Image (cartoon, rainbow over all chains, first blue to last red; front, side, top):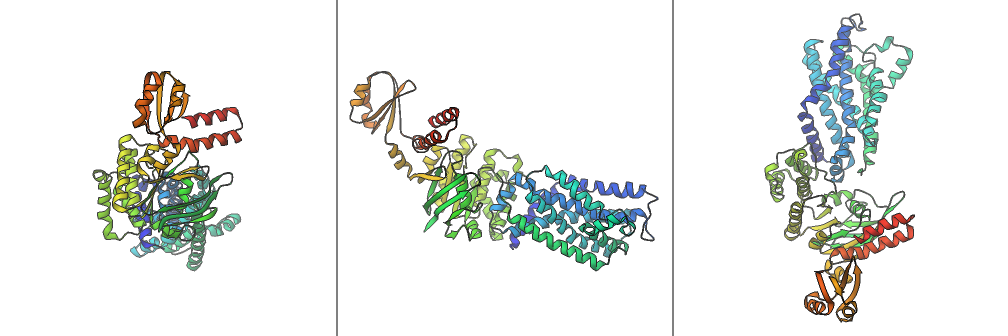
Length: 251
Length: 324
């Protein structure tokens, strides 16, 4: 792997990300709606974790949702790169596809981490008091989570031909991943079919990990969550690198 | 050592054979022009040499490295200017060059001075900090050329570098190319369908059609193969007298005028006019690469059209475009 090139790719993503301040803010709109309208509005919604309100209970899940949507959208944006011809320059450069893939993944993580940081700060101020250790641990958890989900987006984006598929991926992949993850309810008391599907949903373990960090209690053990996330990180890397290997310049 | 040596390169797509057995040798420091009609295989050939597309069979050595087995080494030694600009709209001119320099592994302390030098070379110093999306087509092209050169490639591929540029931008690009050749001894492979461009820049020209190199020589030698200068006469012309002149090779009627092919029009024009009869209009011109191109590529196009054309309309269209 070529560190200079990874840095260069990250440099480009960072420049573009921080230039679009409106986008940084607009990404936070739907999580904030979930937190302050649904979370607060469902006053009767009970928290399965004793000592917390429903709004506080869903907060870790909404952080995971933000990472999920930011990362997957970023990954799919590689289709734009194909259109903008930026990809042509990168595909012609003396760097391996693995380097390109890692550079892109890190770019996606950067965006997700920044959004996570903003949301956790808002949450710590208005919803759920968090000490600095918990904030740092949440951010640390955001790294592998955003890595794995960015990979999913990049893999699909590398194989997709046009932006028209974007809506399909959102409807058939992103929203189901979010709803089945148990971000908004307790999986322990959920219907049977939800429980079973949720076991195959990588986001389930992300939500659970963040819940353990922030609330001190989750559905699985922290080792099960970390193990599952590690497996998904590895698998998505393998699929992503292979998809990037086949990535060709489009006419 | 040859900068580029290809051996029987072939690229077959599912339905068409884009490049059909090209073997070429291009010495270091040469400007090589690749001419051909649309879809002749120019871009595919360049894409294979630049390791963007892998050949179906055959191989090539580019800067001494095999394109099939050492693509990263090949890439370090070449620069490419694409047919359609591929500079990043969302970044500034300077950032584009910076990104490129990092991707090509240039030492960090060299990058900034080199960027300044390149921007000055293509006269974009004042716009260094502007976003590329605000650039005109000519400025993008110039930036792209600067980018293709910044890492000091031994071989530069220019795929239709002046496509869609206005005449003054085109001249500017030409002078950059000449400068490169003279000051850096860079080997340049240029595709174009502007004949003047190939004529004024290239040391040698390969005419490619249907994936094959059908002619390969210096512009002067190619023109000699067509053979002659051309004089066009209008008026009451004595055709028989013209044909009798020893220096006249051919007399044809074309669009209401006589097209006369002759040797050395400078010395013989006076004699030609004296013998010609009552002349209303004279035009003399040298054989251009257009004539060469039409002779070699155009002929083949219409021959193929005769063989394959499914309808008379297609044949007419092909013949007409060949005649232009």
